[in-house]
Length: 210
Image 1 (spheres, rainbow, N blue to C red):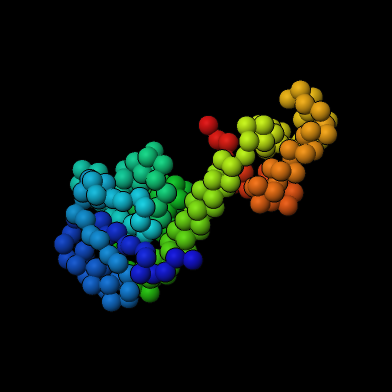
Image 2 (cartoon, rainbow, N blue to C red):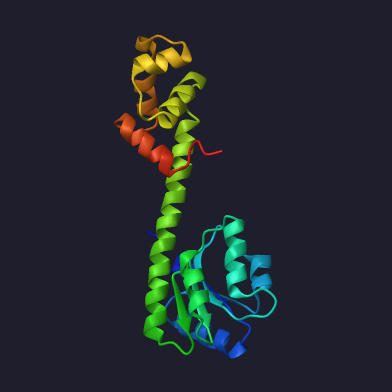
């Protein structure tokens, strides 16, 4: 599990007073904080390898909060977002939450509410980071397989309804007995105890996604 000191809160707001206030408050509570005056300046320096969340002002000039959220989604960057707004906007908040935002806070908000939202973001980011590490580990194990073993593993994952040795052998023009041998080696090298576990881990990690 990630620790708070490894978690960066990115404050993105064009109002200097808000940036300073949030930075001081969160730093006192042990968070690393980086502040930006615009969505563009954030994108210019953002390091995807860092775990964190965005405290994102909705109503910024040029690229607003929702537009930055949409851009991050298109860039396939998964980072928890907590929106801040100086005016209520139900349609905007619904759109933001549907797109995966943690919360949509109306200024001025209570510190307790903000800290709870950041806690949720911290937990979500930790899960995403763990899933990413698990996917990397599974990919590394897959690369230890022989060409034939990779072929069998991929067939099993992509055809979960029929993973019998007879069917796999027919499709790959290999004897069922040989498939049995290769399958046992696949499970051993992939560090799983069953075909069902192999399928579940491979699908969750998008091992064979295009």
